[in-house]
Length: 533
Image (cartoon, rainbow, N blue to C red):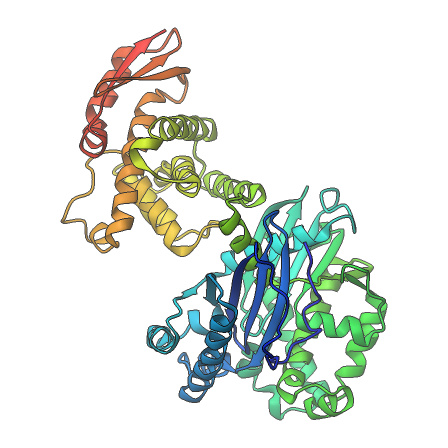
């Protein structure tokens, strides 16, 4: 994959009629990121073999986060500016004849009380449906891009690796163990948020740095035990501020865009910059004042985390969340799947299951049976691989409600799943998973169930199809102590014949099925019969 280093061409390009060469066999895609301090877009072509070639990158500073973090609402002037930028971006998309666009918004829009108004105005002005994503989705996209860009630079599967991205509204921390996501945390430590919270703009530079350090240290102390930074062996920084630091520290850049800053050199740079005001940094280094204003807090956050991890150097990534969006778009248009994402979702679900002390072996057994039934009924339900993943996650978590109470635990499962962060799943997908877990037992969905009825029709259909499968899988799984072995599944007319291994308690299974099989018959028109091989 070819990734030009972001930051190399950040200004809006002036298009000529003889623009970048686009392959006739390529699929054109674009990713838009509406952040706390800038609106960015990248346009790329996806080649038939899945490679991505970036055609243009655009960056326009817009301080959406300033009013959100101070007042809880997006400011009218910032919204107008952002709309103007997005109108320009929309014209560029039309010029390129881009066929697939994904536009996302992060903390500044996510936390604003008037976010819906802003999103409606964007849609009316440009036709863009902007998706507001949570911290876990931000982290997933960033990690996906970093893992793809690592290549042969270093063995990320050998050492515990911390990936850090400091944005305007928050800091994302992701710990990798063996190349897999072990922990993902979002801290309310962002360059704009800290400025608004501490009101450091009127303070002398060194006093401002002391206030930021104290605030960051207090925040990190509250997460001790969640993320053991002392075990980290490699520190990867993501973001434009880190790339600027690498450039100003005189670090040599690797051919694929990676840079390495020794901790001592980074400390020296931070000490020098904290003696300067934002206006002095802007004049000396030729960057916009807005960027200079945010640079100090961002680099201090990186520095404190770097010392907490106690590593000798910081690797600076050439990619960002937008590259993760591009990877996802490329997979969509080429029909490929990301196994790393799949494993990350399952790992996150299992971590939640362990947190609520459920019987893991039983949960995994139910999940496996549910996926076997899903595959057998593929032509009936017409759902895809992503829905299969949602079913597996719901199966792994269907009993977490027992942690609250064994009575009506399916309702508690719904609540716990709904209020969990499942790495790799969007907020809408978590809502679907929560409903599937909710309906794995007792009655199915009813018009009186307000949460279910508030779902869009297409989501209700998905919940019905997958919950019906999960109910059968849970009934087939038998007791926690004596799981059954499923041999095969046959279709005989309107019956689904499930053949199980010897020793299964058929009477108990039939009784369990009788209590839940009505939903499968309603949705699929199939009755279930269990036979012993």
